[in-house]
Length: 181
Image 1 (cartoon, rainbow, N blue to C red):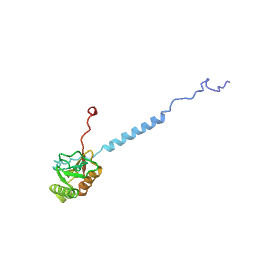
Image 2 (cartoon, rainbow, N blue to C red):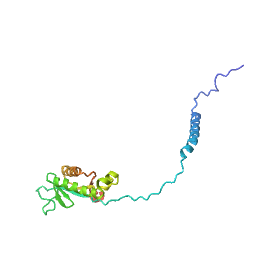
Image 3 (cartoon, rainbow, N blue to C red):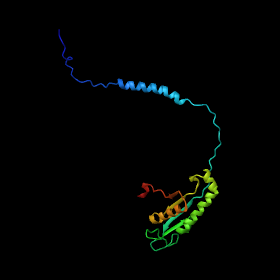
Image 4 (tube, rainbow, N blue to C red):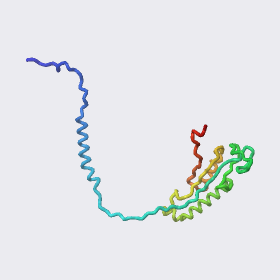
């Protein structure tokens, strides 16, 4: 009687992955989803009312502020001798084209915001949710390229003190790289 002590000289390990557990898990998941999906889709038949909804669009009057400084010689913007904003110059703030100082800016901005708020319905409309933040006016600030941050930061602070929640900046796009040559 002969007993075999090995398998014909092939001692290399098996390199195949056992996929039986993977197939078992996938079949179980398939059965679970086949049972769970019809339960989740079942709904009660209802006839919902049709509502005509027109969003309220208020025409808000945004505030445009221009912030610059006097030039090196102390000349005001707009004068014939003005040579451009100077980082060491005095801050100048313009409401549209009218010059204002920082205290006048806060008062004027607060009155403007109150007038726009009242035009939308005031406190009653705010309590009922008829006034949304995007319906209130915004402050748009244009700053000269050489205007120091202290001037622009002061304008932002003044608008926040007046109650403006949205303050944005207006800038010019950079020129194309080809034209910079």
